[in-house]
Image (cartoon, rainbow, N blue to C red; front, side, top):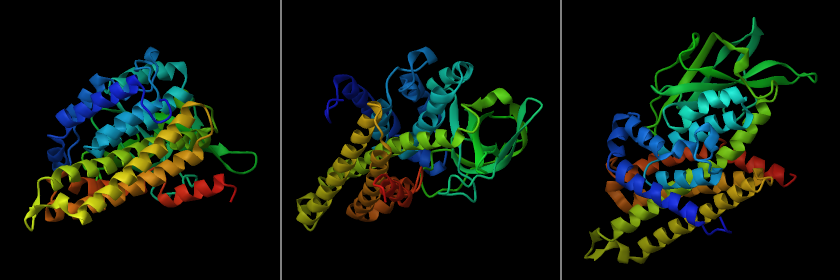
Length: 383
């Protein structure tokens, strides 16, 4: 990426995913959404394309790209559907990347190739029923006993945790107490099907209805000591880094949704007639769409900037928070305006903007609420 101009390789990837999204996802995803059904065939096709391995080195079965390549793919998918985009984001950003960054060589070689092929999905078990934005208020515990971690607790709102191809959940748990009295937090890999690990029935959600989300419980769930991910007691630092990176990915999804609203409206107002004219001829409609395009464009620049800093190895916490805040609010605002432009049709699930409206709100909540992003930005300013 030179400044904000995509290099030839990035542009080729973007174009490939754009074509896939319109040819393979758009025609069928509405039915999956209505049935609240996970789109296994689409995920398999994404796996064969290499999307789940975009930022993972080739030696572990990945494509050898970078995190910005993942974000470009997420944006293009989200222009059509966010359920598919969040399935990719969660398995790569929240599961595969922590494994690659913090895992042992044995853990990487065991899990990453299947994750990169999309044959397995991973999940990140952080949020708890009583925690919400207070990510440090963990209650799930893990104690060492005869060479095994014994885990007890619960997690909520966990994406990719209950599919037929879910391979594991990485669980954040209290593993002891630090010398200063604070919780010692570590992350532990829990394979699907481990005794004591149970998955509740899927949530009934407002949006993201073709993605997989469950509450999880752990009752004397035993996994080998070697399933520790990274250093003991470094779990909190690990998931803070994971969330910083994930916010750029969520920003890309927000930009995709915001741009998808623009694209759908431009097409619709060129066809829809009212009072003897195409509604795109009315300045009131033109101004709405101009504002929508401005929001999408500005949000895209924000996540490009954050991703560029991350790839250069520079501090990017503030930039990631800004990108996530701006893009999620752009998505919500654009979805609302798109629904208004479509009128009664915008309230029908058969039209994409209806799905966009239902999907947009969670972007202001997941991976840090808008309030948390403002808090992080203020902290980085020294306030």
